Image (tube, rainbow, N blue to C red; front, side, top):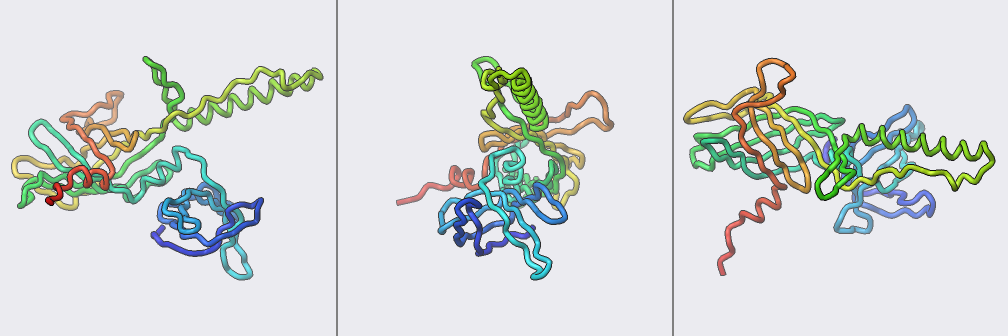
Length: 281
């Protein structure tokens, strides 16, 4: 979906009936659900009343066959989820370092596409040499999934995948509904039901695996760039940490990698600010 800024009326509340003009960005929007009659989009960013910070909403669209136009049926603030955070990675640029035993590379990673658990990206490794004798620009492809932190005690953390967390929530809701129904059937006060509490989400992180799928530019003065190299990292607290290594030639229960180097990246704007030359007075 190409990036574009549009100005039109968004119904900010289906209860108040109030509408106002807003700048809207669809560049990282994704389809949550679609039917023959309606389309529900997530991660639609808009700036009501020219607010400097965007609001993230879900946008429900219908289609008017007579006019051939989409109609805005509903706009609601979007709850923070792993899917939303994944979508917000699209079109973001990260910079940092890739260190191996014998080399240090200034590295940038651009998330070109993030959709339904799949990732397309571009990576650049550069030693900073003027003649670029050790340089790689390559396309990467792979997967991403989100994990929710539900317990954070002194000596123990418990993370659940998004799928496992939602399954747990469904189980709790079903058990609570049954407990209430049993009391009603016995003509007792349903408020006396002993309900299980849904664990709150304390933090969200992403686990990402990318593989080099195509070399675009590559030079190396003393060795070569591996064509099957994998990038395995975690995105948490606005930081990428992980390894870059070579997996086994064939699939097996041993999922390790060899020749590992360390990868560390942060958002490009923060990296550039930290590494900007001092201002001379």
